[in-house]
Length: 232
Image 1 (cartoon, rainbow, N blue to C red):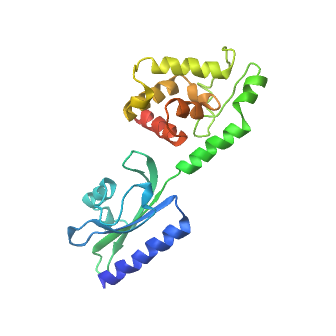
Image 2 (cartoon, rainbow, N blue to C red):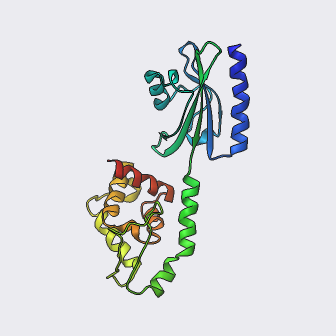
Image 3 (cartoon, rainbow, N blue to C red):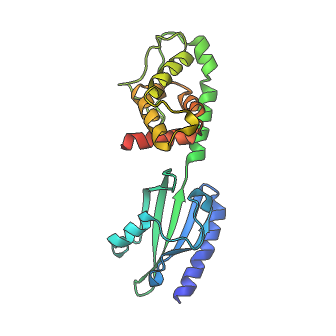
């Protein structure tokens, strides 16, 4: 009976993966006999996992904490991929008629494509060339999460144009790391992004795109580095 139940969930994994699309990773863990392995996965490119891989740290911690004894599921908690990209995760505990834990069905949502779309839409709505040409004395912006921050918003640009201001702030931030960009580690990039954030760099329109180009990475990576630098 337990095999039949998990086989039905294998079908559900395939169904949800095709229905929800490539931004949702669906994972089925078999927890019987301490195997703790993946027996079905859809859109595994999000975490880089495949059938046969063992359980990840977050799921293992749930087992250690025996969360399944008091909950049927846990939703919308932060997860991390192998490259430390933040995803939104939810887990349902699969139990048999006796209440024994058989497996876990996990859904992981990756929003990096939407973050890149957000940055692209903002760059279209507020193109840097337009701001350089027509801005007067006040530059009021939104931070990278879309919320207004009046305490440290850059309200005046004393530099001749935003491009030069970005160049100046970036040069200042990178001065402490005398390493070519193509040889920088992720930790060094996070340090630079954290320094730029403290200087108010990301209050400037187009700043994420500028930093991504300078640090030779994607816009999604810059948002991830911002999260990492804030948590340090």
